[in-house]
Image 1 (cartoon, rainbow, N blue to C red):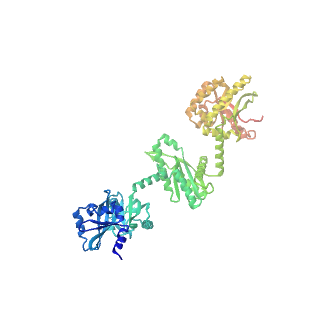
Image 2 (image 1 turned 30 degrees about the vertical axis):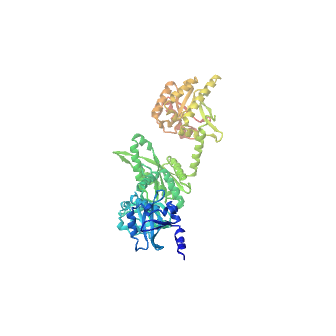
Image 3 (image 1 turned 60 degrees about the horizontal axis):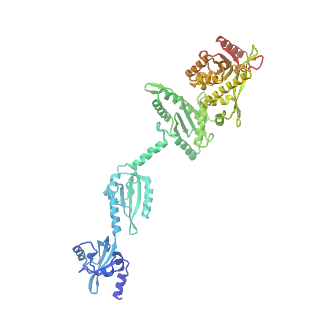
Length: 633
């Protein structure tokens, strides 16, 4: 084959960068097209240049390197070459001595390794200076190097690890399959990022973020790098935050939201019958108000521990709200065993608490709901146990099981209360007047004002249904004032027509009498309508004794001084004492209708009524008997 042709094929048509150099003179004899493109010189320029024109080494260094070529078949060097634009590039030069036209020349192939060198420098810098623990594995998954931060974190040095598998040292036994999977992905060219736990040489567990990625050279994966970032502080913060989300900060019991989640998860996972016990501490607010919240908090902490001491893994205890606790009882299904446990809870709550030599007694009420009869999710079950708890307050043993009728009553009361709030604005109230008749004189002595409510949706609502709800919600204050104003308007209207019926008896709630400004408010309404004090009479019930007695006495005193009479309504059905009859400065006693019913046929009842009348007469009180409908009565 013609040598010129062979030269043309191997040199000028080669895609690699090639130069032909005279080793004696250092002259560049020829350059192929790839060299022309890479360096930026023309062939003519190259043929007038020496090797030192593109090599940044001094000529002596270059000649010294060339002298090593004789006797060698092929040698590789790394140089820095300068391009026509003065840019310097890292190159690897493969030199092969050849004889051409009876002259020894150097056949040089140039490879640009700038990016490779830069990457290697970056990798070395990253490896040495990384603030994280780094380990390098070879293609056989064996450790070849670790940095200082790896030693600082995991307490191993390179001599202990080199040539071994990383799995044998810092990995958890239960996570080996995950590590094997991650390494497999990395050796397939993928990057893996996850969080995990690793074990140091001294047995300490370390929370770490793990980054596994391949190191690629010339398109081939030559190593795998694993970086471990210590995230122990972050994880501890997350654990504390998680505990804050789950736990009540005072008692460290599960809080409301997490407790409901636990119930729902238990329903989903087990589908077994269980019960919810809802506990409400009785009059706990009095402890906070009288002794202080600090003592109240200590009591709650001690109580929580008492309850925890009663239960095992079959129970879950929660501080549901301020003075309310709830227990998920996974194994209690039968009513007798649930009641037995509830009694045990109450017994432990009733045991005295001691703080700074002070002994404190508290009581509680317990409501119970059961899955699935009383609800199919956590919030409904707890709500129904809460409803049952409110009924437990009226029971002897303070324990009550939920029944559907309770919810119906709660819903009914809610509906009534909702409409009651707008009853005045919608003109739904009316006042009826029931005459008070003098049996001896056979004439009307006055009348009792009776409030009636007719709602367009609910219809007629009995007073014994809506009045207690008005008192409970505080609506009675607004309604009571409206009643007084309407009665005064009616008295004024009757007077304008020549009709005089007095006094008009007005029922007044304990809640009204507990208002500091009640007496002045009533007097102002009378004066605004020009109504005399003897035109009305206020009726109270025996429950007045349960209210804020000092405020009530003050209001009664002011009203009595103004000339308004006070009567005791429904006498005999509550818990009045003779001392209270005197304290309230009563003018009249109204015997409850319960004593009048069947009065004719019952001798004991007749004697009881006679005794009440005799007592009232001895106290100079007028007596009114409610519900007399026949001559015999």
